[in-house]
Length: 105
Image (cartoon, rainbow, N blue to C red):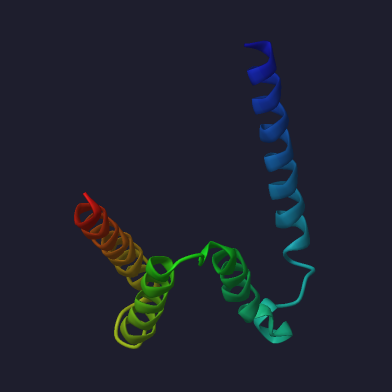
């Protein structure tokens, strides 16, 4: 229990210190859009995704989800697109995986 409390308190302190630093530095730093760093977040998530694409099912789900996000992003707000494509991709992956498992049984 003391170990867990120490770990939680250290994370709490680091989180609050970083929040304070961000609040203080936020007024000094230039606008991220002016720096052109808006592309960093999609590239970071793409970097996390690529090592997970180890089979045909994962590749298919990623491709369908990406195309779905691109299409829905043209007509719906961003947060809703993320929600719909996230749930849809998970359901598609589960459907394909369970069908494949049933076919083997």
